[in-house]
Image 1 (cartoon, rainbow, N blue to C red):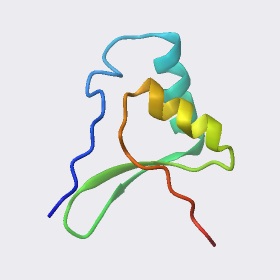
Image 2 (cartoon, rainbow, N blue to C red):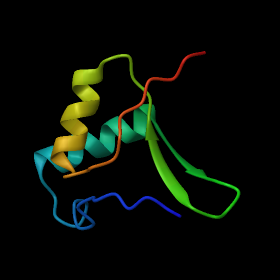
Image 3 (cartoon, rainbow, N blue to C red):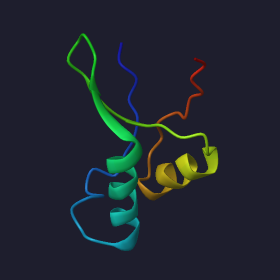
Image 4 (tube, one colour):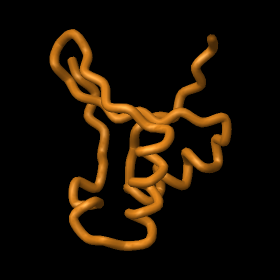
Length: 70
């Protein structure tokens, strides 16, 4: 069963300084992924958790921030 997470679907529809910052951050340190079942994901990679939390807050996201161990 898929987990439902919230996200401001209209975040990129209106130009703002927050929107342009998140878009630039995504362009530099982000990626779009697709899993085996066809679900699409946006991923940000950073060692700065505060920065990721700011993106999460700006986009009204309830998605989890996870640590990846390599």
